[in-house]
Image (cartoon, rainbow, N blue to C red):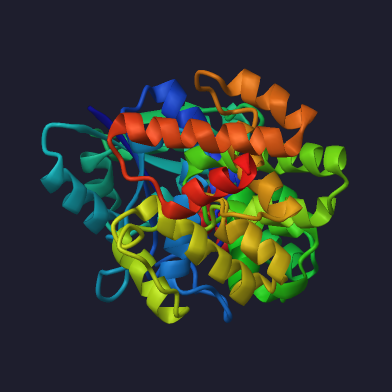
Length: 396
Ligand code: ATP
């Protein structure tokens, strides 16, 4: 197996890192890529006001997800837990012990490659891993790399070096980005979920007021809560909610906010869900205590209100988006259905449901509720009483 190892301060990880990682992954044919945020970097001191190691770890994980390689990219915290200064040679030795049969490749940009001989134990590094070096700007030419490559080969005969050009190289550094972010700029140089996380955590003096976020900022913040594969669903729900709100004369802005936040706790496990229920005083019935799917609607509504200050209308649209209930408001119906029929949904009957939803909102809702009840019953799953009551109320 070929394993790539990409270390950095990742303060924050940006599109330059992502473009380089993607290029190496493809060109070297890696099977696995580890992103490793450095603990105490030997090369540079951390600027004051930097995020905590845990926050850098989470930003790096979110940036890694942007690569869309699923389980082939993993973010490791091995340097963050290490006592004292963090050296690449120690990290490589640790990984070599874990993967003795595999080929390790260390990824690095121009600045790191040109100073490799000055690192701690460069000979050890070059024995343990091949070097995949790439330019950080269009000006980082092959001649620049060639001289260093020749020098390293002469000095360290065991060296294996692969130099490459990153297609669509993104000329940015984390230092520049931190300054830009403090001035309200830089979003375009980050993966959306990383930018959202920065706003949410108030990093780099962004000072966003989470309770009054414009939609352009709320969207990346909402994405930062999601598993990467759920992003198309949430963006699709936003689009569907806009269309339904326009069709039925509802408040489009509220529909968008509810759609963006409706799954904000979906990725949490049972234990975390139950902790949130306790924290927000959410009372659960027997069925809800066992069904994760039912809990996320309630905890999501609680977070939407507590963190983002949504009003009661949006709160209840999120709260009821999974079960529905008797006597739903227009916004509740819109979010329930937008979640159900958004463009990335693909199940038997979805086209008919879509059609009915745009002919008559209540008929669409009734059909959606009936389909849910039918499906749950066929699978042998209990149906929540609120869903049955919603259907019965509509049937009159
Ligand atoms: P700083 O501004 O603090 O120097 P940085 O942008 O270089 O930060 P690091 O986390 O220190 O980010 O870099 C980690 C690795 O990514 C290094 O090997 C570096 O050369 C490489 N790298 C950084 N920026 C880019 C970029 N825009 N394109 C390609 N590689 C990059």
